[in-house]
Length: 266
Image (cartoon, rainbow, N blue to C red; front, side, top):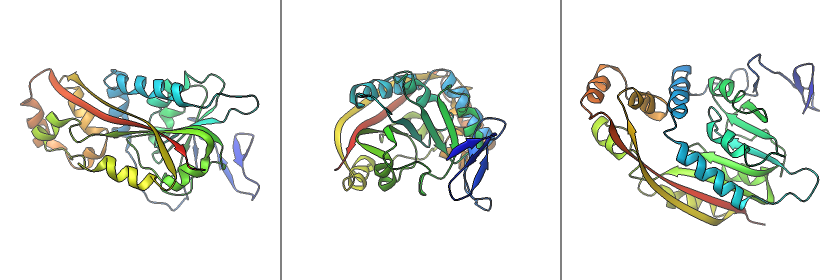
């Protein structure tokens, strides 16, 4: 695609206006999706701005720096974030790649609005991560996927042969104190194994880190955490408020993740 007078145009004649907030919406006009709402995105932005997930962003950036291909001249490839939300993690990783451009995809226009301002070299696009990604074959040298949907065939298509895919997934004990006290959604015990099975036809694992830490949350941070993800569709109202009020303050909450680096099978 080429940019002309604030509009993206493709060779087939399709055109997409750049919104005044700086993002491009590539979803079909009649599409209906369960995207994160403005309230969910605001909760996520506030929660992340407080630094609660900063260790995840730092670990992601460090592994990206250690595993990404070294540019050898010419186009270094872009850093793509699939389901990147507000751009919090993407912006941290971009700091490690000063010569690269970033592309963030998310199905929520409210997330894309914030992502467009997250970093000067990140371009935010509203698109469906389950569908064909609006990125050229082998255009990316680094692909990020943090707590987000993933289509392994499409991830393989857009990644260069020497590139790296970094995936962050929650472990079964992630947020366990809140899962038990508030009745939140549980992480599948076999999540890592199922991910490995889905990726085995397209990628080979080159590194894996498992991290467990705790964060201290007050009674303002807890509803933001609950309200920024899938639990927002299930937990709300007075009953949730009552349960949060019964928690100690601050509440020590486990952060438990797996960070995996993959290279494409060639």
